[in-house]
Picture 1 (cartoon, rainbow over the protein chains, first blue to last red):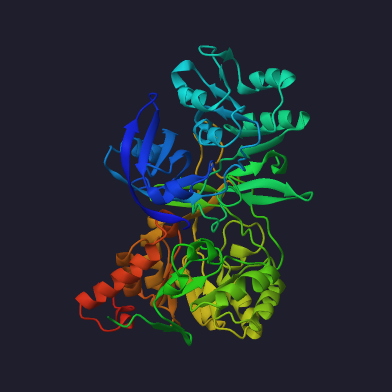
Picture 2: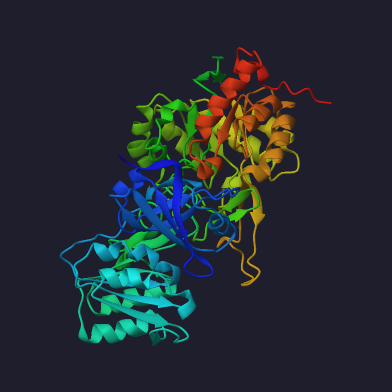
Length: 255
Length: 303
């Protein structure tokens, strides 16, 4: 069983914040094979391009995948207006996920709408794993309860200090790494955050994987638009987020 | 079932639906969803003598009913194309069109010579890429330029030769006539229309390359008009493309004068588009009691 493009039903719709939506979609074929960190490409009404959205959670038993997305533009606005019971045209699962390992103690670091792709991840590493979740403000905070269920510790940072530590996830990260060590860091969020996390991981000799974002078209590696500069064996070149990523080894990314 | 097969410059396509260069890679990715053998043909990703990295991202922006892209011919180079991608394609029952681009006349001729001894069915000359600084479209925007490159390539080319035209010209029929005169076996058009988007908050162009090529349904009427103008001017067959997203567009394009079509951007919206087009075309012909798809080519009843 591989990638598919088909219509799947929204079986539950929640709206955790003013601009953020949480859909459960019934698609046993996708739930069965989707790995933590992979994404789906969703047709959004009259838009020419699909919208890539990372899978937040999969439930093989119930045949459900969960996506949590934010209104960013016209496509996601259209998507946010779908109702429970409607069908979505979904292409997936796409890309490479995080290299999960039950024996490794992971630190998951998510910023804003970069938080949801890490939830599935939080079940796939050792129970000693922790997470650092960053948001603009308390009113933007999402999925905290879900992470608490799966992680040993959940640290929160908000830019305005309305919840958890005031500041960025990297502020928490530097304090945490001063007294605790991890086998691997998995991160998803804005590029400056990923760059800072990657740097901290390198300084602490911790393996690090980041989920990158780039404007995308085909989603399957044919059109080459979603370029991300990477280096392998000392040689720089453009990899593609949809096929080679979205998860990259942080040390391969040219920041 | 109506006859859907078309013959272009001696090459037999099982149906007139070809996937457009630059949107379909070398076919492998889409073959995971359906056997690409169901397509009439594939025009491969534009390939150059040297390996090209392409332009820095962002390389794409969405526009009303379309997209602008500035990939900039990122490709593995013709040697790797011949060694690694072509054998896979040639093992399939599909017409394979190699699309080539270059910086100089020599580049084009060398690429053609390398392809002469392969099993490629046709060669499409990309002289219309708007996203590279040298070569590409610079060969394709004047009659003299088109005539020169076409005739130089024609001398060495042992395969049926398609010349792919840029719409970024004043008189498309002049350009097409120049290609025909210089020995092209077929004209394909249109490549993308140069466009630009600007982020009003950052005041930066959305594309890192500043400008890019517009494609998608937005360009379809322009493409139909240009195909019609070219069909009125040249005798060689035309492959029409530009914004085709459904079977109705294909019928329209063929009525305008195209013997076959290429589908590009629509693959991004729905990767089953080419199959839906083939099916819809067949039903249209049947419904209208047309036994052969060739019978609609150029049959627009112009005022």
